[in-house]
Length: 108
Length: 405
Image 1 (cartoon, rainbow over the protein chains, first blue to last red):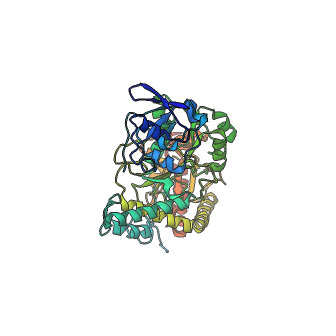
Image 2 (cartoon, chains in turn green, orange):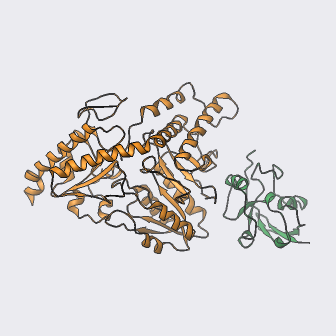
């Protein structure tokens, strides 16, 4: 089974199982990692904002216009920001590393 | 549409006063009476906050703002969602340069601009230099245009953005925007253009010209003062760090309640420009040529500053040998023209734009900017030719430069 790593705002690294076909948001939730996901993955908020490690960022499929729109509203947006709900694990993403931002903005 | 005589230059629909003939359309333009009419209801009965989501007044204002956004977008070939409202081109230029530079600073730290840019671009670039960015300021040719090979050499893989104005505010020359855009796209740098003097005057298309960000001003295109816009490309997305924190209006890029009447005015001004630009350009070119022929027919040693062909029709920047523009302007108080860009006209330094195109001090000090616009008439032009030519002749006979030389 692929794995992935969440780096929490304090710097703690959490390596967890990352089943293929499951989103980063769902993986966070099933491992009690504090990634909010207020709209539960329907792209109506930016609270599952994650900062993808630059080495991994370039390997992700390009973001959609809708995802970019939501990211516009994310706090602390960076060049490698994505929504956790829009990253689906494939075997190519085995080892993925993302950082949780220090704050999110719930725009519902 | 006619307005006759010398004391009537303000235009139809505006109260006639005993004022000079207005020939300074690059400084500002009168708000078109049709624009004023479109704005008026939004000061009074349709006063709602366009961000109020819960009631009719908010929806009514929001509809008006969104219609205006669409009108701005369609004038430049953009989609409405790519246009954000600002207080004017100065703010748009600040947001564009600082916003993009700061967002991408972990990867790129170099900005390319040009010596003849408006002060608000040059000062912003200087500010970014203090923040640690490197800035390359391109020179211009004697025509006022940048050299594309020089630009190509200036862009490196660390260049985050190239900012070159579409039309110069002092000498009216049109930079090769499409070619610059194509070069930036190819080299992976964002392309910003300050189009305050170009929008509504020349055709612009953000896709065809590969423009990623564009600054727009309301009061240069017969809209109200205090409103402008910034075009920000969505695909591929250009990201910015906002300058102001607040309610997250305008896609989070520019917080603050939108001024509905001003937004409506800018939209209406763009709609009118879109319909009338072609005819207006023809009419202004005829007036401009009439003026230039009139002046050069009466006066020797007149120098046209900036490229003779690649320029907007509503501008002439002329130097008169052996004449100081301060002296000239003192003698033609019944004409409203400018001796440099109004933003720096408080200083007695010769214009940095005229210096950049290689004018010596004497010619730079003898330069005046004459701007023709929507409400300029043939009578205005003939009157101006007569006054300017007469005064230049008089100064050349008796002027202070002669006496002290």
